[in-house]
Length: 288
Image (tube, rainbow, N blue to C red):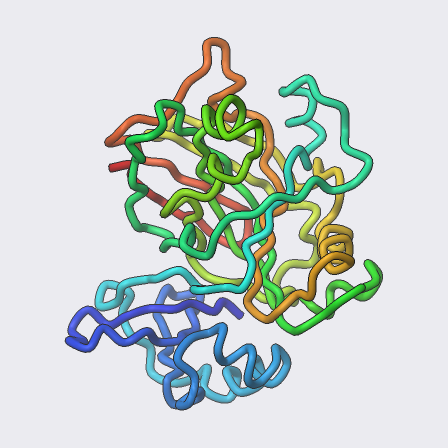
């Protein structure tokens, strides 16, 4: 199943709706399936992933709405955590000249970073080195602490595409070398277009991942290059903090980022960035 959040363009109240996007591209409105839930995260929290999927399945044959009548939003909004893994692709480690980390390197973004799959990316006045990073992201489905890697898949609601927008000057040379400000400015985490449930992705460690800037291919790799796999990342993070429904984990980016190009390349206003993960989809965001 492919879960989304959307608004109807003719809805003056601009209500957030939970939906299923079918293979035809049409959208099934699940408002009647979850009448007491204000968002997909809310429904996950109240029902849990299994009950949510089962209820959605009961309504999956309902009338489809044309996508042209809808605004596709970020599939998860206001998560309690947006956690990210750095240096988690072998080929990206080679690109940076850094050793492969023996343990996952985690950093965070703020919930205010989350934006929609086709929303604009604001160019902050405080940076001159805005960079791109395509990523596979995990969405947590239920509460968990000290999760074993062998059972981590039971805690995953699904997968989505993320763009880890980064201000490299603030990541590397400002703020005392702490990554946070360079990673966590407003709008620095477009996600979407939907959340694909694990039953539709046989192996999250064998997916093509890419990024294009103004149509030019910049990143082109596979999640087979992940140093620490999806399940290990979930398990490792859960040692330190309790994972909650709707939490998002970005699992790292492959080589081809602008900072390590020769000479370095950075985004400018007007650029269009497309991040794509096989079997999940494409997010497309313009820098403004």
